[in-house]
Length: 114
Image 1: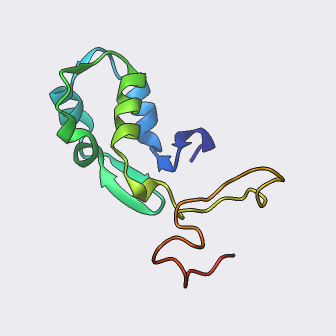
Image 2 (image 1 turned 90 degrees about the horizontal axis):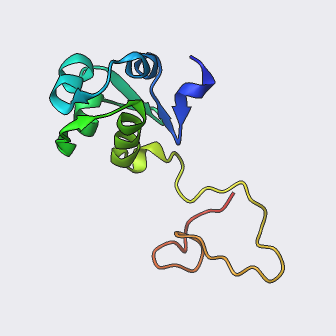
């Protein structure tokens, strides 16, 4: 699969090509009728386009960008991958940074840091 089909932890694969070549504007119902069964992968988990954006009940999408934005708005934590992971170095001198789930936050005392 082309690398440009993955964005923010979401893999559209062939669906991206289909949505980009779709004739717009298209109603929400028509979009789901034509592509609702297509799968979207998020960090190893899969869902259908209909399960993902079906609850939005938009009137129509004017272009691929609006469909893509709807998808990105509806993905949850499953698209993030490993939570609280950062490949950044420790805070720089003078930088005050406390990441969510970091040491010292309630219930996280036993969490191992890598």
